[in-house]
Length: 138
Image (cartoon, rainbow, N blue to C red):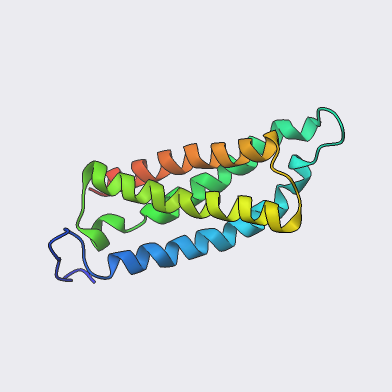
């Protein structure tokens, strides 16, 4: 919708719906990442060598999530700068930080250091990818 009317908040009326749809896809994708990263999160009573690769899984996932969230965000929202970046970063990382602890609790796999590394690296790369991609579109 390139000619959508903006409301007083500075974004088109469909932008929150676009964000919610993208957040839903990121949440569904994070369910897959959660199960894929389980071998990296297992604790065998000591230091697991696969813990070293947990940030790679999270980094790649966060990079994809941030890039996906920022794609066409400037055109859809009519926002620019740090306001748009903050909205995109929160929208890209919130599904991860909700789905992961929820699944950990429901399935009974405790959150350990490797799980925290997956989430943290995903957050950092989502932040970088969302800001970089959105700023390149401005």
